[in-house]
Length: 138
Image 1 (cartoon, rainbow, N blue to C red):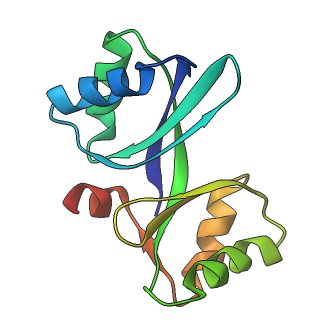
Image 2: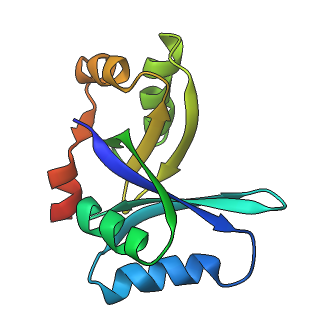
């Protein structure tokens, strides 16, 4: 149960995030979740979209530099402590989390150093892992 994430490397200047999102929108690719991090020089726009193959091709054709990676997406109960419980399963096992961000509703993307191990760990818990097909169907 893995989800494909697109990381778009962009200059840290006004309008670059909009260019990416407009390019995807015009092509009919729906953004399900995103995160932006930046430094003085550049930024990284991380995206989970409904059709990652199309999104990747469209953004590359538009001249953007993109990295595709696998991440985990879990569906949390909408209750206090649900995120903490899910994250602690992975962190208590010593798997390093590089970043976490949310998607629509209570879907949360977790990027870890060892995706396969974290999937195995979470599969043994009362946690719903989300597939790429689930993301597409939202």
